[in-house]
Image (cartoon, rainbow, N blue to C red; front, side, top):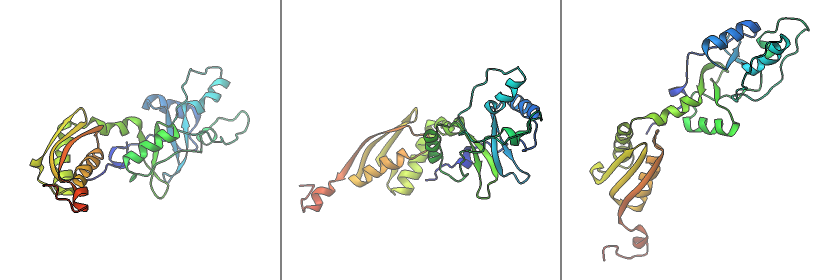
Length: 230
């Protein structure tokens, strides 16, 4: 059973700016791309920081035209670079440098936990060389729960029952409604019953499992020399 990774759902077409990009260019890009933040990359696409709407707010306020911007939660606050008084601010002056990132091969579930733990909703995806290869948004993570029920059912039958447990799928009825899986029927042992539930829970898009499976053999009774059929 293949687990989805960040690479499977991330947005690879990244909107970004250079450290020398001026304030006006960044503001225009945020507006045109309809995003609330952009990564700041060097010439090798290595991540230097992130500029958000909130990072632009102090400069806009200096001009007396600060809009009512919302501060995005995809970053943690870092120090801005000092700039000469009266000079035009660029991305290197405005960016936040303490950025939470994820690797492209990180399992999607782990990425979701990192988002929740860090209290963020948007993450740059950075490879082993520090290059940005995509961005991961909360909507990208949630996309796995938009899988069709029949697609989920087929994966449970083909991957969980046939390939992982090596059991006849005709012995198990698999019903999926709204991402909730109901397993019913009979398997040989309690261990198989428990594994069927465990593996089904790990299928992308599953929000819950109702396990109605029975075990034909009581391993506990067998362990103590009791004939479970007597």
